[in-house]
Image (cartoon, rainbow, N blue to C red; front, side):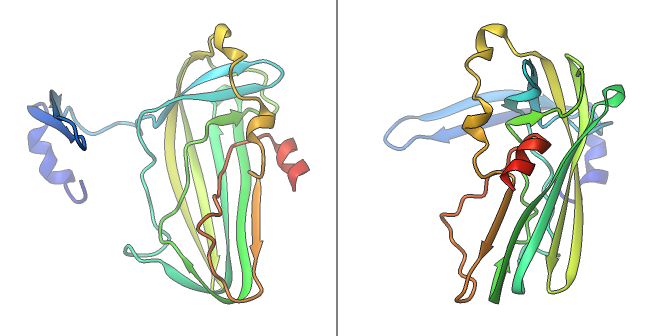
Amino acid sequence: MVNAKDSLVTYFGKEFDGLWSASLQGGPNLEAKFKAKIVGFCDTLPPVAEYCVLRGDTLELRLVENVDYIEPQTFYEGKSGNICHGGFRSEKTFTLDLGKNGKVSKGPFVEELSCDGDVPVDADVNIGIPEIIVLDRLQDVPAEGVVHGSWEAGLTCNSEYIKRVLPFSIRIVGDCPEVEQNHWLSHEDVTADRCQRVGSCDNGCEWDENDKRVMEILSEEECASDN
């Protein structure tokens, strides 16, 4: 709720009635009532996702469930994008702080397009919650607890460089169940074309809507070999 910080204080400690409703095409209308309480301001960023620890040939975090989202930001003021003359370049870096176990940094993940035309660029800083985080060179990781991290995103457009930082946290819920470990996707199933995307065009800059840009937080070795 934008600009509601001061006005919300008077509601701290109070309980409210809520209602979820859904209308299914050709089916019934569904409703579910719930109660909610505003207890105060968050001391830290609430976790956006829960991960389990996969201990095998590599040490990894595997996504169990998304529970929130990373607060969105924009590169430009307002909701509109911008026109980049002659292409653009974006770089995104992911950092996870595991305290005494060390830090994990991935990137920069690069996406660029160079040509003679004009390229429309969205104002939104598009980042995601990764399904797999390979913990390079770390010997261990806490089995449970909240871990803080951040995405850093930079955009070069029309000789201007704009940087944004998006902090977040995740929750580690324990080791991945042994009975399920053999059913996780292997690296070979998820590493195709996910470290760097580079495009070019000869006749202007027409964006390909079918070009799906997917990002996983892979090991440095895999990114190096792909590039």
